[in-house]
Image 1 (cartoon, rainbow, N blue to C red):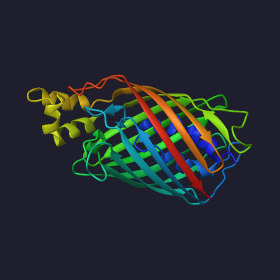
Image 2 (cartoon, rainbow, N blue to C red; image 1 turned 45 degrees about the horizontal axis):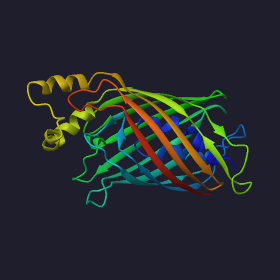
Image 3 (cartoon, rainbow, N blue to C red; image 1 turned 90 degrees about the vertical axis):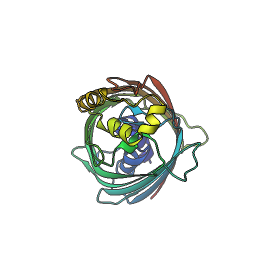
Image 4 (cartoon, rainbow, N blue to C red; image 1 turned 30 degrees about the horizontal axis):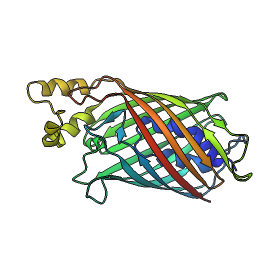
Length: 293
């Protein structure tokens, strides 16, 4: 009955790594666990979702201008823990039908009742006219682990980007889950609030790749570095540093098969190289997802 409750419990801890897809790994984890039991619940399921975001962020970095977007996600979960998924993203205000399509697969596992995670591989496809900063990358290997302390849940996520650029990331995050002890319309619904904090560490070669791919656009937006600073910027982008601190508060209305959620996220980018000049920013998301068993 509380499968979706677990999804919200993981909301800030699993997606903090990139905000790549608003539902991809979280939803894949949901139907396999029960919040009120000690065992993994293996269920075959199909999950669909839709999301609105006020801007596109990728591992703590955003583009030179805001890109509000809408995205859709589909995830199939098998009983053995394997899941496959696809997502599509469109930036609002531009003519192309889509800007990004992601496809991937992974596996969910559980070491103990309190310690589990997932491993996955994702490939990104971009429209030739897409200018989201994520387009500086091609593939992502993701390994996520989380431990439930009872009073809070902590996670560590490792990512390796390869293809157009090569980068390494470590994301640390902690959240606390609050669930209402009252119903809104009937005894099958409830509210959840899951505040969390996260820090992203890693390299940022994908920023340099993005700049080289779209140098004509970067010059117009004052983020492309001309010689002689270009090589220096590339060197700094390859250093492993803290990239971002963030605080997120998701508030959700839940029913047995679906959830509607609004979330606020405050992002503090650090060690921003070149003239990209990312600054502190507030992000707003509205998400709907439905689980078919």
